[in-house]
Length: 474
Image (cartoon, rainbow, N blue to C red; front, top):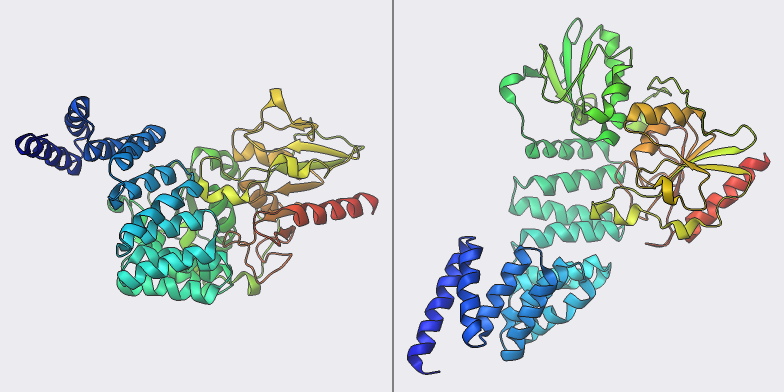
């Protein structure tokens, strides 16, 4: 190709890059396809690969950028894009090599070290991840994301002091970074530091879209005698069940309570005699004060370890006995935490892990929405179908035991004071405070079974099997 043709092609590449920067992907794609239809061009393939990542066509993205590397393996950017395509496909093991290849060509780019660290983190190779994040910070001391993810990694390693330090460094760099404050708060709560935890947890409100013109004055502890308090839902059924008990205590001041909640929760809370009115999240009745449900904890300075609690604190009429067998030990079972949310992957248990957990003496009822009636695994005797929390609450009081992963069922069973075996990973959600080995200060009836080894449920299942044998033979 003569110099004039090269210059024309480069001008077209520059034009495509410009379109890419403006998110005009179709225009960039047309240019690059035209270029490669005439002659292979690594930059054009690279741009097309980047567009395919955006379109979530990861296999095609990988194929295209590999063509770029075949033509010119000395461009670190091509290797980075290949690594990113593998990561986007969640093939983190394969992403390691291209990131390393890029660093062999140029190890001074902080972001590539960060990408490599993230791949290691996803693979739970925490020591390698930490090394990569520190290399990122060495090259870019104010790399906020590295400090943030370091805090998460240290938490996974149960090095909570280092986790707190990393989150605090992140906040020092970017004081208004809400996610860093939230993660710091959740780390404090996990280790039982409720004063600091609730304060930092308030930063979650920075992520809300509040219709302030429809709200009155925020309740921060004012006298509620003969006042009306509007409690705002935060679209989390576990949080709503978890925190609502403390709103009940406010009735002692002859306070009128109005609760906003979603359709899943509406019927259940509409039946609570101590709640004066239940409305949907887009309704704002007349009120004197408002408060977000999660902010009750900060205002009331709740520490569950020294706060008297009463159970059950939700009133239900357990009446669904259709699946209950009087001659069996009736168990409600949940194995899947929250499908579609990768942050809950380590909380879900494969059904193969519990194949030998139950016996003929047990009547095992699936409370998992994802279990299909027409393909019910052999460990189950039946499945309970429910469409909201009120329907779920009708069977839980009829059970002898609930066995569950971290799921709304655990909170509802705990609120109803039903014996519950809760299975959690090595580092669980903040609610299952690690200073308590087998119990939780939040629910008297919940016994916790914690992993000893990350991603290994063997010891958890073994301990539950032993407890089930003891229970049935009592």
